[in-house]
Length: 66
Image 1 (cartoon, rainbow, N blue to C red):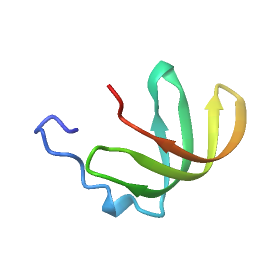
Image 2 (image 1 turned 180 degrees about the vertical axis):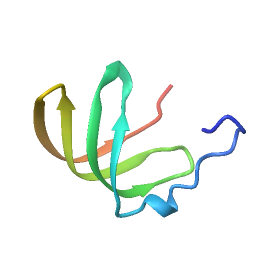
Image 3 (image 1 turned 30 degrees about the vertical axis):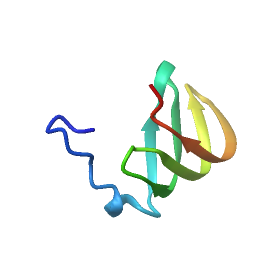
Image 4 (image 1 turned 180 degrees about the horizontal axis):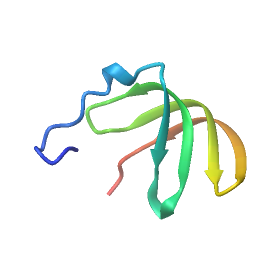
């Protein structure tokens, strides 16, 4: 969520290539294919980037579990 308490408007990022920082300082790059009001994301053609290393991991579903 943004600082205002409203979730960000992700519609404008649909089908666009994004760089997403995950927990544990992990970074992925991929194409946003879907999302919901809980900030669960579906990212396609995903590549995990760790320094100079790149690992193709395909489709990823990321959820905002507590």
